[in-house]
Image (cartoon, rainbow over all chains, first blue to last red; front, side, top):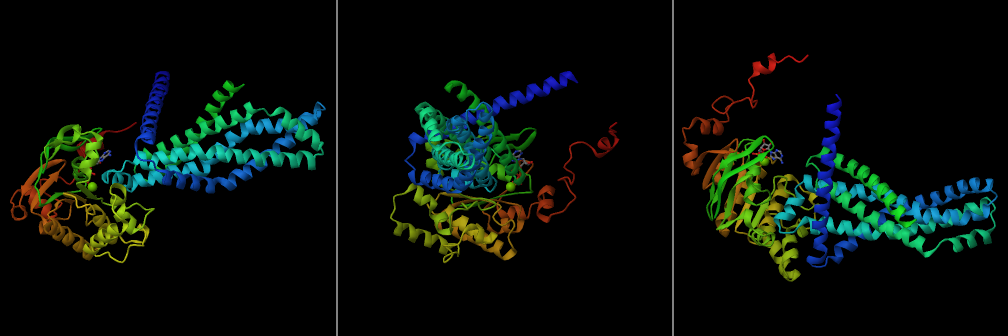
Length: 257
Length: 263
Ligand SMILES: Nc1ncnc2c1ncn2[C@@H]1O[C@H](COP(=O)(O)OP(=O)(O)O)[C@@H](O)[C@H]1O
Ligand SMILES: [Mg+2]
């Protein structure tokens, strides 16, 4: 019983390490094409455009609600210490350093990442990846790489959008609804948000964009070539992607403190 | 032109190809016949280097496919075309862009030249006028024909067909079969057709290879195969359930499984 349990843990650990190795290998092979093959600007732009347009609305809505909730919740907490005037900076720092990149990444996984996985998985099932291979077009260079690049470039832009809308929504709730002094709110925000904070947020956004791209393309590329296989890969991409983003977020946050 | 030597491909415990030796001759239609699961698709994937053998080797001309650099392999792929079982058209592109894809990727030809070439190939397969349709708007037979046009757009030396007639109505199947035969003969192309369709096979084949459980069990000209007295060949061609090729695919005897009581 106990031995069995240890055996299971050992086996799944080994499997996970093997998977990690495979992810690393596949993504580095894809990325190697970034320098080698002729510049595929057109494909990158098309992917970035698709991601941006597809995720724009959901990111904006999430940003708005996040800013509103933070202001509300923050006000309740800060009021206990009589320091409502700090509300602006509390909201801004939470969004810029933490919630913008993390929630932006999670939304990107749900909205665009899962469909990247499904798209590539379907190409696998229907033999389109093999067909590309037969036409001497490397699917890693042509399908995987542009999608990794797209999430890498699009997420920082989407996170910036998230931040701006989140800050605006926080202001509306804090100042117009809860009656915090407008000058104090803005002044606090401008005084406390330092360039390092913006920098930390963007570094996270770039890292998360990379992670989302790598994991979602990988899961599709290695999907078992059946319809259930693609469905499973899509779920796995969302789970593995979200957990990786949160784990890496912890690591990066500890660096930036 | 293509030759395999002691080809073995295992998937876990399943031996899909078992020391398979075959030779594909230039300018001929070679048909590889076999029931489902006999290793036909696996064999095609080896011949086109989409998959690597567990043991043994595949020779394309005088080059061992397993030893090639990826650059050289992609050069060789320029001489190969493949019509996949489910056509595998790129579903984000219309018929024209699918057929033109290899040229767009690998040549600097003017679009007007490409247009002419695409029209010629589509005319050959009887699909001219359908350029703007998307793959999802095509029937199975139409998709096969477009895939055929795509496979030969760059005038390859050899085209592989995986079950070109499966899933098609008899007329579409007949059209595709005739196309394979006629185009091979007219253009000095080599065709390798994998199928379980005995009728079509014997009709168009110069050379027939009969595959069973990953092994070649008979080989020869179509007439010779049709008249063979080898009981396995006769059973396959006549489609009889009883004979030397067993009905049951289980490895353990039935009574053993029945008697193994699980508590
Ligand atoms: N990717 C794979 N993984 C595991 N088993 C496979 C795989 N591909 C083929 N097989 C097995 O190999 C055998 C031959 O398959 P295949 O070449 O597809 O046969 P055919 O095309 O003649 O129907 C079958 O038993 C099949 O289950
Ligand atoms: Mg098959």
